[in-house]
Length: 143
Length: 143
DNA sequence: GCAATATACTTGATTAGTCAAGTATATTGC
DNA sequence: GCAATATACTTGACTAATCAAGTATATTGC
Image 1 (cartoon, each protein chain N blue to C red):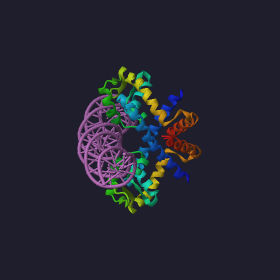
Image 2 (tube, rainbow over the protein chains, first blue to last red):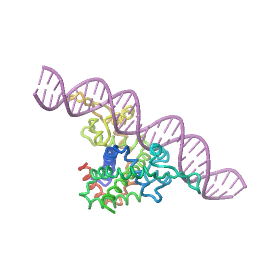
Image 3 (tube, helix red, strand yellow):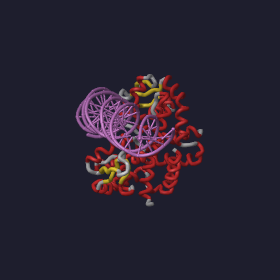
Image 4 (cartoon, helix red, strand yellow):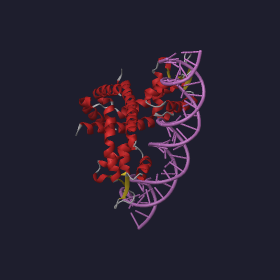
């Protein structure tokens, strides 16, 4: 197998894996009314300084567009899981802030998320997982 | 970092990488009027015995639903890139067959695809790529 | 200071996929 | 042989994202 074909195979495998991950997370998080992407949002907010991020930063972190983040956040705002906060220095910016209800839901749904994560990436492969992490970080740092 | 958090980080990195891959492929393949998923379809068909696959098999290989594959194939059929073929033993089955125009487009667009692939996974990381491939195959075999 | 350019976000239109239901047909178990 | 169940595919309705255009505001360069 040539390096080119291998690269392509890997990319196809990644695409397939992603569908598996998404489906698994969606299924396990649905009891909490969250999708995989919803969970990612809560996760990033929960790990951000002050539990808040600029919308554009959140969108970038997730690899989606500005309008994508607007759309995805709308129902979460409606449910009171996240809120908005203006930036005193830049009127263009609207922060997304994790609301108490959102933080609680994040914590509660962590169990379902970890169940899904372990279904896809069993902890029995801890060593290889460390390698995978390094590889991914390296790849992403290039992109 | 606990193993659980690492697993979650990896999964988030995978999700991000997938958006990078999709965007890169979409951008580079657009000159040929193909999306990343369109290219995947042509690729699998081109590598299948007789250049044909059952729709349900194609859908499974790509990790999408039966209706998803119906939708995705519709424009490709319209463009004459793929065709249909009945199965003489099973009236439920409708094969997807790669048409000559589809095969040609696949070959022509391979350059753009490989450009995108190498942008995301530079060949300079050949060694690590082999590891990545093994890891992915192993993960997918579990899922 | 001001026009040109860039940035952050939203909105209307569109694209691309899933879900649920439906149709047709094959398989299973009695 | 036949009803129950499973499989393959399509379709209508819906969800979820992107694109393009728009609004507001900040930055840049003269």
